[in-house]
Structure formats: structure tokens, C-alpha cells
Image (cartoon, rainbow, N blue to C red; front, side, top):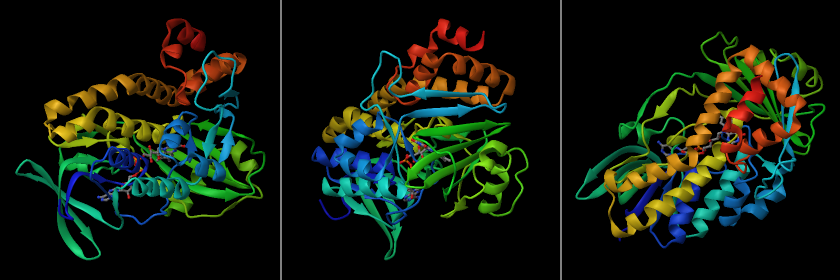
Length: 401
Ligand SMILES: Cc1cc2nc3c(=O)[nH]c(=O)nc-3n(C[C@H](O)[C@H](O)[C@H](O)COP(=O)(O)OP(=O)(O)OC[C@H]3O[C@@H](n4cnc5c(N)ncnc54)[C@H](O)[C@@H]3O)c2cc1C
């Protein structure tokens, strides 16, 4: 193969793309991994990893390094608009155990750079500062037009993997997206001096908004403000909008009296796009490019890593056999549905409740009184309790009655 011919070109080197490239290269495939950014690079994210994410990080050989620089989280605390509070513990009183009894929180600059390095170590050809311009197809191959410091050139591949995130250009160019209805925007930064931070992640829900707090280092807290983009958000810069959003949360603001912002404020969203399916001829999507999780459940990184495993498991031998029509790749769509469908349902149910304060207060009240139910629900978002455990009619009835 020449320097521009690959078995697979993976577009985007976030967790989904790096993990996919690493696992395909490990299988002996000739994989290129391109990203418009140079690593380490920041990514707007609340920077919490569910306990089950550790399993895939271990498979990728980065868990020890990641753990060394991460804070461990014992669970999640949720605070309702009226101040009702419940905590679900990962090592709670439930008959399920995850890969670990702890979640992890660490800056994405660190995590993502480690994952890119893991892909390179396994033999993927990493091309940073390289932007996807256009995807085409010719002679039974995908063509990938890229632009880097030297200009524009074309790579060819049997398969293109679109791992280019929320506003995936790959998905758009392949006609796999449509506009969704939900519209939230997020502003995220790191702060020092936040009072009362313990070894749990926190979600504070307000009207049409929520704030996440996660300790990501010694006296360093990730603060993520997520707002309904349909309402007014005072401020012209990301920093001003972050601050005006945060001021809606009196309880959180009290703990910020001596706190200061110690990094850039990053903006993301609006999250309003949905993907019709994750496959086309000689192309698959993975991670946020395939479907975006509302940040509330903090599952995006796990879904990205798990999605990478599904690509390798279900598409790996199709690449080797060069059988990559949309029909042949439908097995990957099906596998994604099997693994993620129940989680999509729960995510939608949580988003529904967040937008309905009366319902949310009722659910928060029930979960505050029934810690085992809170453990189960947080275990589902931690990716180690099967969703069916909370989709049972008896569980749902106890939540609202
Ligand atoms: C506010 C917020 C909070 C969140 N909090 C959490 C959380 O606490 N826990 C959690 O698990 N998830 C969280 N998520 C979700 C999580 O950030 C994503 O699900 C995760 O980053 C998806 O990984 P990915 O690899 O699919 O995409 P990304 O991490 O977005 O990576 C995509 C990559 O593609 C590259 N790219 C894009 N376009 C091009 C192009 N044209 N050419 C070349 N490269 C390109 C980008 O530079 C980027 O590096 C949050 C998301 C938001 C917005």
C-alpha cells in the first residue's frame, strides 16, 4: 500500500476515533487516524467517566496512567430545583457490580492525548492538524480529501469511520443526519477554590438548566453549565454566558464565593442533531457522530469507547473481506441498537423529567427516601446496572407514586 492508501481512515481522534483506530490496528489493519486538532487539546465536557469506561481503558492499555491522574468518584449526587438531594453510589446496595466501584474524573486534555498515543503505539498512523474536507468514492474505495499544513491531498480506504463528534462532517456528507428538537447549549471550565466538593459528581437541576460539578484534580473542579438555548442567555462571550448561567443556581454560587475560573470557558451545542443510522456504503459512524447523549448522564465517553469495540467486533472481519456495502454493515447498526437502545430510552426519560419541574421534584423526593433505587438508577448511568432493572413497571411506579 502507498502512503495514502489505507484499510481504514478514521476521522476524529477523540475517544471514539482513537479507540477504534487502536483496536483496528491491533487487529493488523492499516489504519489512519486524522484530527484537525493537535493533542493535547481541550474538549467541552464535564470530564466524568463511568465505572465501566475503565474496562475499555484497560483493554486499550491506558487505565493505569489515567488512574494516576484522575480523581475517583464514589457516586453521583443530584439536587433538584427545590433543593431535594439524592445520592446514588457505585458500590451501593444493589446486586450488580461494575468493572470498578469508582468512576473517574480527569481533564480531557490528558485522557484524549493518552488515547491518541495508544492508537499510535498499536500502529495506527496518526495525522494531527489534518482536517477532513470531503468524502467521495471511486473504484470500490472511499476517498478522503484532507487539508493539512502542506495543502490538500487525498487518502483512499476500504472504509471510512466518522468519529468527528457532535457536528460530524462525515455524517452530514453521507446524508445520515437530520435536525433534532432538543436544544441545549453548554459552557464548561475549570475552577479552583470551590467549597464543599467531595468524592462524588454533582448535578444541580434548575429550570431548563443544570450545572455539573466534578473534581478533576487537587482543588480543581470541572464546572459545566447546560442551558436551554431557546431562552435568553445574557452575555456576549462564553465566559459571560457561563457566569450568567451559574448565577441561576444560588446554592452552587454560595460555594463559589472564594472560587476562581482557572481555564478557558469552552462552549458546546446546541445539541439539536440526530443521526438516522450509523452506516452507509463503506462508512460507519461511532461516538457522538453516531448519536449524542445528553451530558446529564455523563455517558458519552463510555458510549464512544463501547462503540469502538462494536466497530471492531462487527466490522473488523468485513474490512478484511472487503465486504462493506451498507447492507453488509447493517449488522453494526443492529449491534448498536441492541447495546444502546435502552440507554437512549432512559436518557430521553431523564431529559423529559428535567424539563418538567413538578415531575422532577416528585422523582427526586422518592429517590431521596429510597437510596437503593438511587443506587440502581446511578448504576444504570454508570453503565454496569442493566437498564431493564429500572424500566420495570414496579420501579417506575415507585418513582412517581
Ligand atoms: C457539556 C458537555 C458535558 C459532557 N460531559 C460528559 C461527561 O461528564 N462524561 C462523559 O462521558 N461524556 C460527557 N459528554 C459527552 C462527551 O464529551 C462526548 O460524548 C465524547 O467526547 C464523544 O467522543 P467522540 O470521540 O465521539 O467525539 P469528540 O470527543 O468530540 O472528538 C471528535 C474529534 O473529531 C475532530 N474533528 C471534528 N471535525 C473534524 C474534521 N472535519 N476533520 C478532522 N477532525 C475533526 C475534533 O477535533 C475532535 O478531536 C459531555 C458533552 C458535553 C457537550
